[in-house]
Length: 421
Ligand SMILES: [Zn+2]
Image: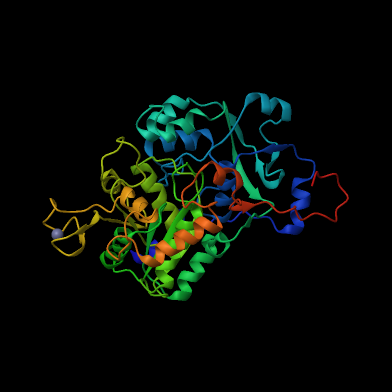
């Protein structure tokens, strides 16, 4: 059981990164299509195998199958569409047809080559209904679906110009191959993944500790989702460095805890996104994945524990869900207490976002039963260093932050062709 858990989804880790010396030839003369950040992130994820067994953007058969049956056409479980959209006008302008290759660019620099196997229109309303269980335009995943342009282009991609991950994220950027090696070097046989989009408070700390015990794990991989931000979110820098601080300060031993980043724009697809998170972390080498309350949910679209229940309906994924309930502060227990154990639910004090905000803004003293002083210190430093004075995303941050990922000038500087470098 545990042994087969260690293999990537589909059995083989996908790696589609061109050697630098071949990249120039690969992209020579290709029509160029500028892609937005979401697609650029997904190209990188596909190329390094985060999304194994996907080798590119989904064709119609895969997409139908994912939408209706939560599997790829090959039969492997897959729950979230990974598609590249383009407008019919843009396709006309490029003159691209099935069988052509296309150079996808990001930040005006080459990123990846897409071998166009299919170009197809899709019923977005239906797609939204199947994936999100709703067509309500207030759902952010539905919004994202509705915003797709009218054609999907599908086919394998090859990364021709690996991005540079900027500080402070560079120290947390590990490809699946690298992470698998690190996990092997640490001797972890069982690794439990923790998905995060938050600065860790004491409830998160205990969630991780509890899941580690429940899984009988050797290590915890904190996988921080880095992607599109909304005003009011924590800045990414505070999230990764906050998690890392828990290890530096010894709340987790150095040999049991690791923080990494995942480039991903949240879909808020609730249970379906939980399945997706499990598959991606399986590709990173994790054997277990913890799922708390309302995992990847938004609003009231999904049951609080829908992400726990969905795994009962699926075959063995090769990564085991570790369903966990909430941790809160209980004055009677005199500590952080677990929903499944504490009998003083009337007195519980939620470790809510509101409370954390009050601590961070100086209205409430931090304490080890809410937010670690060490973590608060990091959050405040990040506000100064990266957040233009605030640990929360605002317009200034969105406009002026250093991007997580930058595209270098592409490698074929000594060729004599007319690439528009
Ligand atoms: Zn209690």
